[in-house]
Image (cartoon, rainbow, N blue to C red; front, side, top):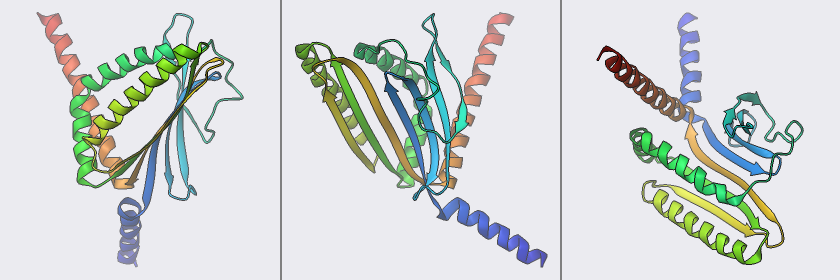
Length: 222
């Protein structure tokens, strides 16, 4: 009886790790009500779903506060007050910050990329963007620039991922000032893939922390 129970448990673990298909999604939303990121894991039919909501709230000093919220809601519409006007030109500031982050973690992303290609993991990128500056001419020029940036981004990603699908829509609004983004990146994986990637991430973070401690210790001792 004991052996049967152990075999049954191992069988369930095997099914959970290697057979059940899961979607891991990173969703970014920005509109006049606020800005937030959602990290979710769910089965193909959505029967089982778990989400982390990370609101991005601007303080008066211009700093960004990250707050982790566990739950099922996708938006913070009831609890989020209207923020200040969102300007499209701050996309360039975000681009620079993202670029610096990617450079600092280039080894980690390269390791994860090789793993995704090795396991033939499919990746989907969906972006819906509405932008307007209040001036028709400026809106048209900015829309063209955004399409150019999107083209460069997609071209860069397709060079490194074997299975990549994208769906991008950029809509100009010529009669008002607006900058709204709905973007998500979906990975079609299995639970074992998520565990391996998380181990890689935490291992890299640990190495970075240890390296920083050694550098600080060396400076103090010197």
